[in-house]
Amino acid sequence: MDRVFETERELRFGDCDISGTAYFPSYLNILNGVNEEFWGHIGYPWHEIIWKDRWGTPTVHLSCDFSKPSFFGETLVFNLAVTRIGGSSVTFRHRIRCGEELRWTSKQVLAASDLDKHSSLKWPAHVRETLEKWLVRDEDLDF
Image (cartoon, rainbow, N blue to C red):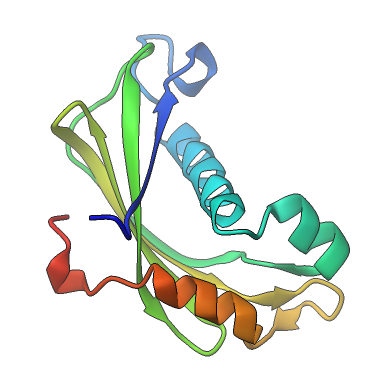
């Protein structure tokens, strides 16, 4: 589906425990990097929106379901889908796999935040319009 963002990440030594198994807190750090890449891909690189425009997208809800372990050196494929856009929030669904094997899924809600007032803000019209181009119905996803 062309409205689902896809990128890859190799599991590095620091992402894993001593047995070489991916350490789940590292998964969340990797997921944050995938989110940052998505925002840059759609024209809103974090270094600009945070430092210049003074807004951010903190996570306000996150749920994860882990299916199988991942291991040091494996390449994981991350899919990110925008499934809901609220007045000041956006919902992402994530699918993470190695090859065709599902490793974990996640549902994440981010809120538009004014970094100076430390409060939520309505999506600027141009950001909302961009997000709407990526909007996918949950029932149209295969994850």
